[in-house]
Length: 249
Ligand code: 6PG
Image 1: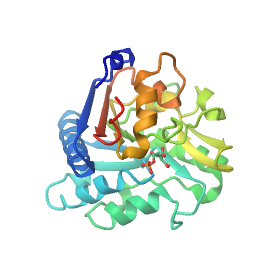
Image 2: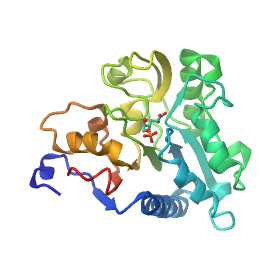
Image 3: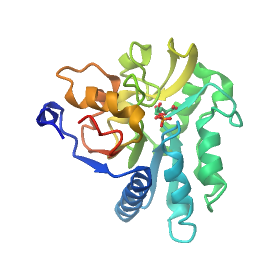
């Protein structure tokens, strides 16, 4: 790992693991520890799942803890969603349902999907109301997740906070619609204040395709990439990166 890495605003910890199987195991361990701590502290575990391909293996591994994970006290949300119905191949909810919710005894009422079929604007408003009601957030108060999972795109986006997109500047909404010019599509995404109010955020990054962006993000002298704005004010920031994605550090 190069000397320059110290320029990056050091996360609470960066773990480089040999391969994606190790990443899945390390992530599962972190989720399990976070769940046990949250339930011990306040009786429930709230987690926001990330989408894309990387976390699927973690969700499948989590589902194997059928008998031992505290499902009744775990509440699943989504940090972002595509503007597609829940059964669409691109749906983050569909991916999590296939990998986890359909394989483990997750109470249906414990899963809060983004109603993306309403269209991005209405879905964002609807989901924001759901969050405020679930967390019983008072006016001006931000819901605080026990854990938010995140990935990183090859241009430095996270959740659906893409470079040069409007939602990057959102400071009052918990959830926002976001037009992604690069993809010519609308998304629904947690905003930075929402993400940064979490007790813990965990990036999961795997594969050689991420090596360039991981190097750029960790060695950047300035704040160029949206992912660099994830910095929980009162929480832990963890990166679990496999050797292939960390190969240029
Ligand atoms: C999404 C995700 C997104 C993802 C990154 C990385 O809806 O796509 O929330 O932020 O984490 O794009 O995706 P991969 O894991 O597929 O590389």
